[in-house]
Structure formats: structure tokens, C-alpha cells
Image (tube, rainbow, N blue to C red; front, side, top):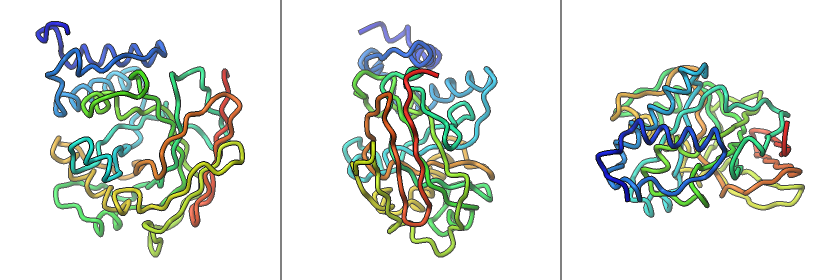
Length: 266
């Protein structure tokens, strides 16, 4: 363990950005710096995003993580964690995922919101969250933890921007009005074989509750969800590891389907 005095949020950001750019994994930072608590981790995440923006990227939304109540209990939290999406993470529908750009990618299906209005806590409810949504879309998120074997404590993954890497959202959305997000079902296939199924109930019991909790949690750090933001509400199923040559498809009841083809190099 290194001297705690040598650690800072800037050093955490340096290590994580270097790991992402060099495509190499690292051990838990909390092992080296026990002072990396949740609040400090969000500060480090902010530094990581600020550097990406300074490098020319644009913030386009947020992502939610740990929206499973069972996972929250294991991590000792009551709300989803949040990360930030930038335009550099977005894949167009039909655009391949280049596995060689990442460390150990995994893919999970998501219910995605595009916000019509800003959402600012505290006091956001599922009803007020629903009123702020413009459209609901099918999504696939590619996660790629910078930590070896996806082994991390909560502050580690928060500092690592919730394992963000890539995402794709269906071009056509549907109105949230009258859509039963709890019962919205999806089937996840890899190379044509069904590997998992689930419904929106897997996301905090209701994706709208997850969105409300995220908005209220962001407010505790002075943040909010902006009009026009893309919001990935959290993996509906477990994420699946992928390799070059794989085709990953999700088909939803009402939101349509999406496929990502995994290639080794561009």
C-alpha cells in the first residue's frame, strides 16, 4: 500500500485514463488508497469527464448502474450509481463494436430514455420522471471495467465512470405514455442463441423509479439531468462477455430490436 498522502482525485483520474487509453487493466484503487470513499470517487469521476470534454468530447447524457436491488444490498447503497455518457461512446445503429479498442468488453440490454425536459432533484418521483421523458428506446450498452476481472469496490467503479465504454440506441423511440415499463420484456441473443430474458422490473422494480432515484442522487452533488439527455437506465440482464465475430441482439416487446456485431479491429 502506498502513502495515502501521495493520492488525490487527479492521480486517480490519471491512472484510470491511462488504463483506458492503453487498454490495460489495473487492480482495485481502494486497496492502494483506503481514503477513496464514495464522495471522493464521484469527484474523481468528474475529473475524468472534465478531461474528456477538454479533449473535445461532448456530454450527451448519463448512465445508471447497480439498478438491481440485490446488487445494491451487496454494495451497501440504496440508489443506483451514475456515470456520464459522451458522444465518443456512442455507436450508430449497425456500426460494429471494435473489441481491439477495449480491454474486456461485455454487453447488456437497456431501456433508454431521451429526456424532453430537465429533471432536477430533490423530490423527483416516478410520476414526475415520466412527465419529463420524451421517448423510450431500445439500447445496448458495452461496459468495459478498467479493473482486472471486473473486480472492484463501489468507489472504484464510480471513479471509473461506472465502467462506461460504448452504447447504441435505437433510432426510433416510442412514447412513454401507456407503456408498461415494468412488464416490457427483452430477449438477449448471442450468435442467434438465447442467453437471457428479463423485464423492466429488473431495473429497480421499475425503470421510472430508477430514473427518479438517480435524479435525486445527482442533486446531492449539485447535478441534474438535462433536457435532451440520453439516459441508460441500467442493465436488464447480466452483461455477457463478447469476442470478435459475435453478433449480440436484443429484442424488446414494444421497443424493437438492436444488434451489435463485434469485430477485432477497424
